[in-house]
Length: 314
Length: 246
Image (cartoon, rainbow over all chains, first blue to last red; front, top):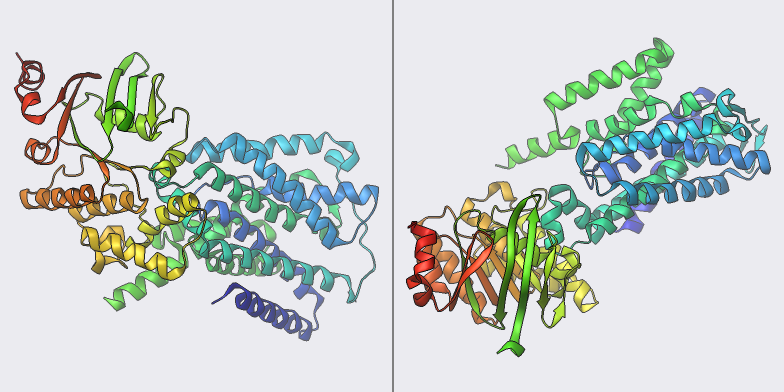
């Protein structure tokens, strides 16, 4: 399927989701849906680096928070429309992604992961000590009462995140099927052999960290307007890092559809658990599911389906 | 003779901490030549290959390829210049199909070199050609895990070939193979040589080295101790001592 056709179908599905959600006549659907869509973007972004090239990034929260705090910063100066803020958040965290990649990508395996974790700690410390964006007390963002075109603000936020999810998934799919995708796969499999086949591994890894970081920042940019109050501890929360790793792992990391399925599945379960039990149980659910999948289906749901097909095909 | 040297190594040294792996090695290989490189285990053969191909960087001396100094170039840049290698232990891209394994050097080396993209049909043609050359045409859609050891070694050679190199270094491409499988690989290398590709064969199987090489170089403890016609080198007392002890 051509990418333009895929994009069109994704837009149609997105439109169906939006009007379906409107049909329910319950604003909570949009609140919960926003979070799930946000995780679709984060999981897809994580997978571009972690799934395609095999470099496990523990710093999702740092990129997400960069996006969120770019918005806080600009909101304090001059409030701009959310789509513009998303672009700015994307540029900022894309640049940080490139920088992080340049500094850390000579490290492999666990060492790279530890470096990304350190990035999150360093950035959080910076934000805590930066009073202009609220410091450790946090910052309030007063959400406008109405949104352009649609009117209802939460529906507007939902629509924006839906569009971002479509963009992220289409990007991931385009990469997967392009020459870049082949290059990423060789890096995941064997970097020395990749170099010997002419693959410029460092450059490709930098492209991956930049795209991945930018998408994470884009997911974070609308967050202050959604939550209304941003403070470092929750914005740099463990939940973002853990979820954005767990979702692709559970769905399957080799294809764009894995993070999508994982995010919808885990995100929905968490939203339901938040309402029925408590949000405190969310990380427990993620942990248990992750353990279960690592044991039963290490290649995620996609791997399970592929194995099943192969065994039937003989 | 020097003017035609495709690969010209002068005084190459490499150490790992206190261990001197290569100690001032000189070696040159002419265009179209078939060179056998032998030496006991740990004599520095693979280190030499790694230094030539850019997987490791040499500390002393220089490597000239096709008239150009390539010290300091990263591995993929050397591959694009026309240096290709196979690995001692096959290192296939396990997540890609056999045909896709060959697409990688086509995309990243041949494209980059020619500055244009292959069309889908050209790509299929090239892949098919190399698969047929090594006899893996019927396994194009399989994955590396479905291949036997000898097939993996053929894939290794095919992938190196797909980069359309001027110089191919086959690092122990026959280790652990049966008599007839060794003949298979030898025939394959001979076919590549006929296409005008310069080949360095690193091997322990003397039968293969003697059958294939026009010239043999011997590496012992990081030093080159002999270099010449295969029969002469075999009679060299120093070589005998290195292999058989005193």
